Length: 296
Image (cartoon, rainbow, N blue to C red; front, top):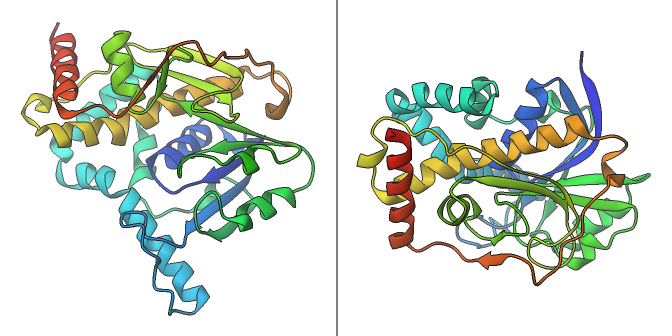
């Protein structure tokens, strides 16, 4: 039996949004609304996309290019490294108790009607585009909006009346804030974590809805031989999105009442540590620890 969650998903096309929607769908949930943010700029270069084209053609080009850019690495691994990835993904799914079919949605062309009866598209120049704020203000009723990426959410969006943004951060808050949360969590806490919270101004600030830590992920055969940049892309293509999606599913499964009005635990700014993107040397250390843990 399918249920419709009182949740609007603000889709920034990529593995994160696809994993959230795929995980919810596999559990029998559809969402109330999807808002697809099609970007006016190339997400790789930041340059405006073909401004000389008619709007409909430019928007179609932007939608396709964003898909190709943001989903490149999951497709690369699943299509060209299948012998390594396929058995590992089955093991990963068993370890964290989800259906491995989730990973199919990372390589398919997007069909958002599979996840919601209401799919809207906004053609925007990032999260700060007034078009997006205007669209959200025009929605009826109170709502919870799931953030799926695209940069820092401006205060203007967070301040929209009757709207609360939910983010799932790849770290146990407030202890691990900032970038590369998956890797920093495994380095400083010995295991990955994830936290769902209502967003407020400030980096990874807001009322905590649910936080959890997980066992360290199993690794595929051949992981140790991967060049470090490939190891990083592998983890962020499959492990990071899956763990965040698992936590989101736990949140909606345990929620009592509407998702925009759940009890939350406040954070203080002086709690925890804010981390920056890891340099390559520290990443290598994390990979070695993961390899030792997987072999033991």
